[in-house]
Length: 299
Image 1 (cartoon, helix red, strand yellow):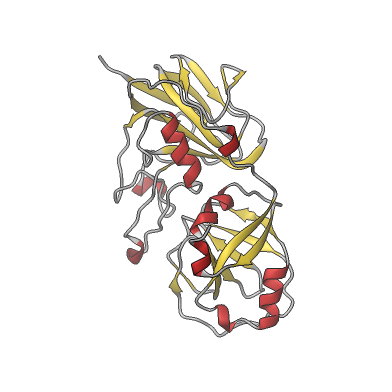
Image 2 (cartoon, one colour):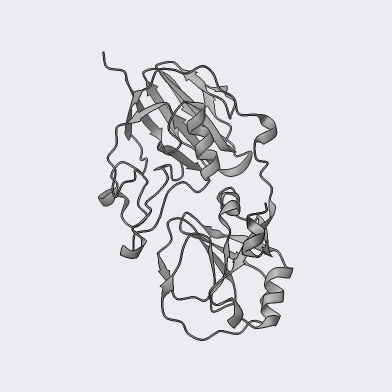
């Protein structure tokens, strides 16, 4: 008996992609890490349907898709609240949901956060590239065909046996705020920046601009005390690296960013705070807090 379920995308959403843990070990070849931006949300989504924590999920930013589901399945939604419905009826997040064949899953108004994660209990019928199912930033259609959802796209999943209903405690769910403090470590060129600019950098709140995607986010704020540092050779960069442009404004590199860059690196977001960046959106504010490496292990 064929227990596959088909997900047909009536509407694809803004940029709905398949993501998993990403591609570790290929950065020296110029391949970005990729993978889910909010790792905690994706992990919980997979747990809710009984999947391995590194199973692929759909990452859905800001404006979600409309999906016709042929075959029964068990799903869960975590992360941003995008007013999800099944056949027009609102469904709750952070719990496993049984879906009957012929249902239509849709998303509406953004309530909080930026990215929703949709898990489906089962084995996804997709092909990996370099040990990952994640959409490739460099050439999605060539490297990872089928990982970017388009209108009319079909996703096939071999459904697992349903597990008893699970629910993630409300007290442990994140609350998405429009103003955050983000902890950072000093970057490779930190000591080369003028002390006046370093004070400016840590004493103000930066605002996210419209230039924010899976590759990086540009911030805007004061530039008092800034002067260009020496021109540096293109050097290694990782997700969370904060570069300072020639105008004195920061760019935070995200998972799909190039593996090298030529702007000086003033700081790097600690991994424990990286999930917070995934749920910010244009207009939200960030204040950077400098921490010492030994202090991170105490939190």
